[in-house]
Length: 127
Image 1 (tube, rainbow, N blue to C red):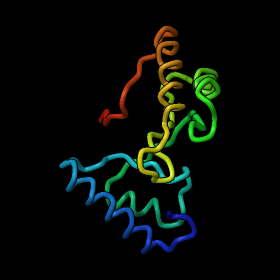
Image 2 (tube, rainbow, N blue to C red):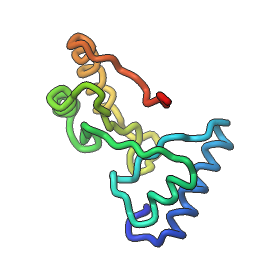
Image 3 (cartoon, helix red, strand yellow):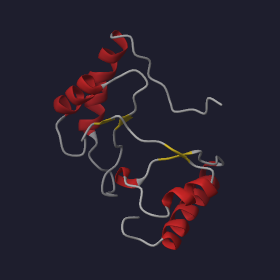
């Protein structure tokens, strides 16, 4: 957790995470979403130094707490062109977390978004 931490702690945590991702995947991350969407003092400088572009969501599903139909409704009501959906595929670092609400919400919302003319894309570097 980065909240209320000193810049040196933030730098060490983010640097170690990036190195681990590269070691495991062979890919250097280009994007970074701050935990809880909060930018603590020192984080932006670390992002610049590690060449991590900031990304935030425009719709958060609250899929860790709401049932699938309510998550899908949040997504559908708040979706907008160019928007970014924030959903979670694992919670609280549990072994085999129950993500059935998230999966069902995606099954409900994505076809409706596509029918409405949206395209589902990964965040990519357009430069």
